[in-house]
Each structure stands twice: as structure tokens, then as C-alpha cells.
Image (cartoon, rainbow, N blue to C red; front, side, top):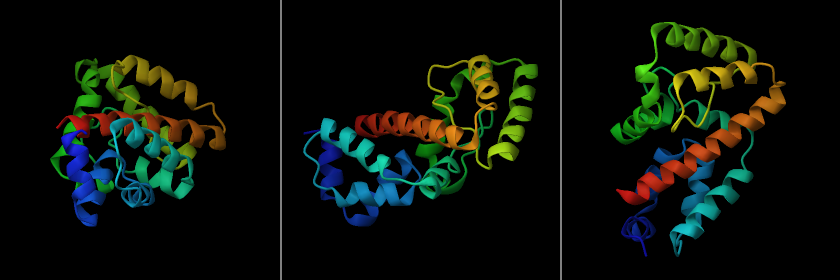
Length: 173
């Protein structure tokens, strides 16, 4: 068994919850994960994470979204900020390609982020790992044409992907 997973299984509820909140800022999701302990292996953890995420609702999704910095912004917000430097470090890693973007792209990302938030009422979420700033901007522009319901579902799927990546990072520490 993975040593991090074994320690998490044995941790007290508060510590176990904090570990999950760094991976995904939705409290109800994190509590559902803690309630599933003990988890036998990494594959079971990954499957359980997806199953728990499927039971979440808009309020849970929005709580998770609110923990992410805007694309192009390095500050971590919400409960992920409470998770300390680990969540902030992961956000910086995930958005690494944005650092090399030209000023015009960064300005357009900021403008489109604001437009997105006004249109949908939540932060633009995209699984940024391995994507350039230009690619994330193109995705953002495309998604601005979505209905609110379609966008909420797409954002929730992006959050699920981020959650899985962060679970993997957590298990490697």
C-alpha cells in the first residue's frame, strides 16, 4: 500500500479532511472521502473520488471552483488557500505555461475571466496542466458560448480532472 494512503487511513478525521481539501476544496466531497476510509489502494481511492464527485451538486462544485486562482492569477483563494502552501504550489505548477505568455494574452485572459464570471457567476475552471496560455484562452472563449447549465457541467468535469491530478501529487509526496 502507498505510504501516504496508509497514513491518511490512520489519520484523525481533521487531518484526513485537510488532506482531501487540498486536492478539492468542496467540503462535502472531502467529508465523503474521509467517510470511506480505510481505502485499500490507489485505484480504489481514484474510483472513490470520482464516485463521490458524481454525487456533488452545484453548491459543492462552486465551492471547489472558488478555491482556484483565476487562470493567469497566482493567488489561491478560498479553502485551498487555507490548505497552505501546497495548494498554492500546485496551482502555480498547473499554470506554469501562463508565466511565459505575452502581455497581450495575459490581458485578454484577465478580460475574458471577468466576462466569464459575470456571465456564469463562478470562476473559469480548466485543467491547465500541460496547456499553454493561448490554448486556455481559446478554450475560455469557446466556453463563453455555452449555456449556464452546460458550462456548469463542463467546469465540474474540469474540476474532477484537477482533483484526480492533485490526488496523484498528494500520493507522491
